[in-house]
Figure 1 (cartoon, rainbow, N blue to C red):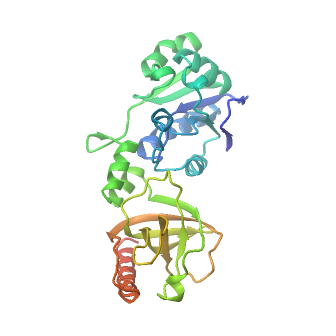
Figure 2: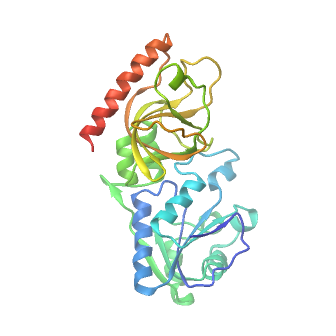
Figure 3: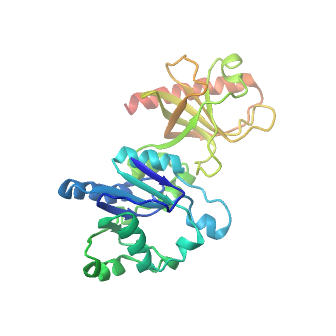
Length: 310
């Protein structure tokens, strides 16, 4: 997959099938849209291209960070996994956001991205103040000669599947429902860093620590049954998200995972922690012995969950 990140100085030479949006989470609604693009690719032989911004528009407009289900790097990984050929992460600059909708269409989608077909959802918006929409694309289709597919949004129990819906379920700690909407487990990526070395040396449960970026939308602090992807292999796990309140000092928000059946040193490795089930909230224990006893129960809970959900 070819990426154009943070620049408008690009030109795709090959004819493309284009879509646009934030694509936060790559949920089932996104998959429906991207899946249609891949079908058109088989029909026409054109490449697939996704237009998005390098930062959430709301974050720039409101002047404060906005939490995301998938970071930019995770979004890139998702697009590559789907088989997308081109990804444009456009800078959210004044020049771009003030482009009239038709100019955005002609200069960027048809011009720089060389779109022969455009695939959008019924609620798409583009151009200055989101003045462009599916109706405008239909109106301009005979003028510029592109193919157009407007995709009805995927639904769950009569509600549109959206990133907002997924975030609501994450905030409730309803991981299994969030995963159902995503069509895959909610995941946190990161490089394993050194923690306080209490897990293995003191508690007898060696753990892998990753520090999610501040923009990552996390579920409630607590203990989760997890699945951990390391070097292409999946392992069962028990993950704690939070600040480790039992451990003295100011601890950063982290994801600490006991990886079942793995003894090797993971420091410096990129791993992916996929959450499967919420077990309990994070809590402060009176002693490390009490914490060790509780972790033993967490391991047992996770093993039983894995056995029941192979």
